[in-house]
Length: 389
Image (cartoon, rainbow, N blue to C red; front, side, top):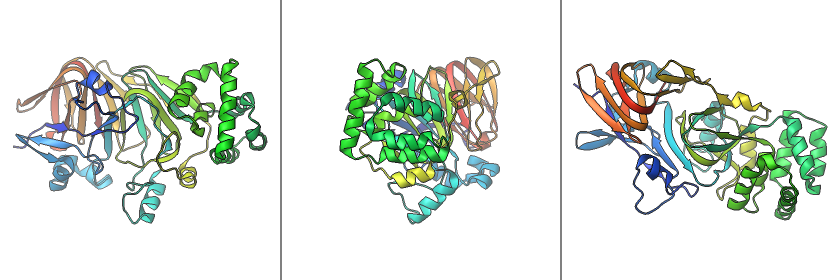
C-alpha cells in the first residue's frame, strides 16, 4: 500500500529582491546566512523541483510522477497536460521585481522552439503562465494597464518635454495600438532623456503631484535609480492587497510585484520577459509581442471568493489549477480528483486517510497528495491553501 500523503522538501530561490526575514518570521524557514529569500517553489518544474519524503529518503517529484503518472496525477491530468500542470510558490519581495509579462501558450511554444527547446534568457519552457496571487501580508503590486485616458492625464501632469510628441500621438489614438507605440517610445528613451524625465517626476512629487501613487514611485526611485520603469505607476494599476485578498493575472498582462509576502499559484512555467526595474536582460521586441495592450478596470483584476463556510474557493479562467483557502475545520472530507499540493499558512493541520494513516503539518510545511489517495479528512486549527487542477 502506497502512502496517501508525501511531505515536501522545497527549494528556496535567493533572488536579490527577496526578503531576508519574512519567510523565517512567518514560516520558520531557516536562513543562517541571511540570504535574500525570494521564493519557495512547490511543484515539479525542472528549474525548481520539490522532493517528496519517502521514509528516511527523498525522491524528486518529477521522478515520482515519471514512474507512475496515472496513479500520481490521474488519467485526466495525464491526458490533458502530461505533467503536474501547476506550480505553487511563497513569494516575499523586499524590493520590486522586474516589470514583466508572461507569454500565452502559443507564443511560449513558438519562442521555446526557436531556442531549440533549450532553456534560455527569454523562454525556459513551452508553457503559458497565468497567475493567482493571494496576499499573506499587505502586498503592493502593479498589474494591468490603466484606462488609456487616465494614463494620458498622468503624463500630462508629468509634463516632460521629451515625451510630448509621443504623448500627442497617443492622445490622437486612444487604442491599444496607440498605447503600444507610446509604451515602446517610453522604453526606448536614451539614458539622458530618461534622466531628464525622472528629474521632472521628482519635481512633480515635490510640488504635490501624484500623491495617490507616491508610496509606489518613491520605492521604485529608491531601489532602481535611473530606471525608466519608475514611471510604471503612471500606466499600470497600483494595487495593495490586504491579507486574504487575491487577484489574477492572465498571460500577456504587464505587471510587477513591489513589496510584501504572498502565495502565488500558476501554470507550471518559468517564462518571464522583462521591461524594466531589473539588471537582467530586457528583450523589448519579444516583450511587446507577448503583451496584450488593452486597458482594464482595477476591479476586473481582483478576485472574490465563493465562501462555503470552512473554505473559500477562488475561481480562475484557466484549467491548469484551482485554488482554495481552508480555515478551521474538524474531519473535513476532501475528495482527490487530481494530484494536490496543500500548504499550511498558519496553525496546525492534520490529514487522515481512509486507512487511518495521519500526517500533521505546521505553518510553512506542505504536502503532496497523489490522485490514488481518492479521499482524506482534514482537521485544522489555522489556515491552509489547497491547489489542484
